[in-house]
Image (tube, rainbow, N blue to C red; front, side, top):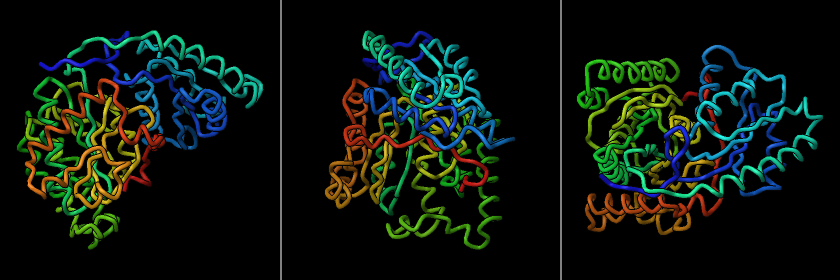
Length: 386
């Protein structure tokens, strides 16, 4: 089994980055988080637009997402900033992070005397947390502790021929070494029920796969009617795609060929190793948030049109599906899978991705990290799932 150099966390999880994060419980606290992050740029702000004004299933989803983001093993320590009257309480998030054995502190703006006083206190806390985190060193650990999120964004007609199958080679390598890969974007699995069900590890998983895809397809039919089969982005069509099924057939090959062991909900941490499907939306920023909350320490992101966005606490490897994109956006693309069209094999490009995964796990920065393309925490709701 492959070994890696990474950070062992007190709860037994493994991080490949050693971030001190600043997490607002509600969007009203983003201003204070920004003031702290501006004063201490080594810290990572997790801006989002939620935390209040929701109920029912949306509240459950948003609470789970923020709680599990706080537990992501790439976070060494955490400062929570609350307002004081929001639905998702800062005290609740602190309890979750504490149970994950992370150093965590909480400030509530209404209790601290307002924005500036909270920011001043937060700056001092974050500096102290950074000092403590700097003492944590990488150690030798098994690759089996790694979870990799799989993502498409701005796909084109070549994505399913070059970039996605190359990622599939890397996915098989991760799983064969005892690790986990998370395939998501249920909207981009429509029409592939029969293929994915055959890969299920048991009948229960097969039925779960069929259920989430069928439900998503039904929602698309309800919202879009006759246009449901064409429910792809304008950029996808400009890139040569003709239908959602064509996009789906290309999407699912990112997950390689190994058995699917579990289906989880958005932002839910898997209990099984291997290939896991996360029931989630196709919008890139929402999808990346979900896999990060599900515990992914790394994301492989294929693109044919050129999507440069990363994620605040998780390194994102960008894989171009064609030469034209790679050459025009070299500062944003980490791997040129378009080389498959020029004579390289999918296995060779897959091997290049595997080599880069090892280096990124060991600390090498991705292009998104270098460019400060850190993105935001973007959670979907029942109104924006499509």
